Length: 302
Image (tube, rainbow, N blue to C red; front, top):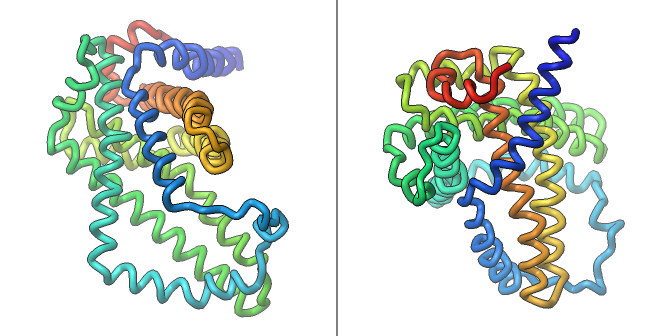
């Protein structure tokens, strides 16, 4: 019991204190400020809201009509999307975006935790990425998407069967809850894929073996589900809801950017740093990770 308590204190210290300290060494999150400015311009140009006509009761309403749309019309729309070549162009663009916001920062943090980061660490981390790492990340991402699609299909079949038997708006809520249960594991998979991809050791098969432990080993699965559930909750509030509300409803450009930046940038960056350290802790028993980050583990003994 004492060992478990000390291990939990160590994990909390690394995730809270060390992550906040290392945040000042990690510069790539400043790219988010530029991203927020672009988002602000896009929202102001294409999104127009009539604030006088907004009804919160209407925004929160889930009805049988929406369930009817989900269970009867959405499958056909999905089939149309899957047979449209533009869908795959969009997915390719999203994967490229993931490389920028996930693989590149993971490469940067790998160098930092191995004490290899120099004056031009961010640029060197980008140059250091190899095409094999991108291909491996694509395989891992494809695995996550495939598993999520299977889970979503099973949840859809069950809730649609229930809706056909007893039509009610509650079935759409149950379907969304079903989707949400897998979301932390999906996010963990996207996070771990880039962190395993940048490892200099191990071949494709060895890295995939470590990656699949997220779904086959309780020691990796359950802590990851809990940690990324907390991360999703925090990001939803401080990175999505509040900043987007500020961008939508505050008129002054500089006030919008300042408030959104002060909220979204440090929180997102802190969570990225904490996620990397959580990955190092959860995968510590495995030789591939242990050897890659031996300096970090030596500086942070159990």
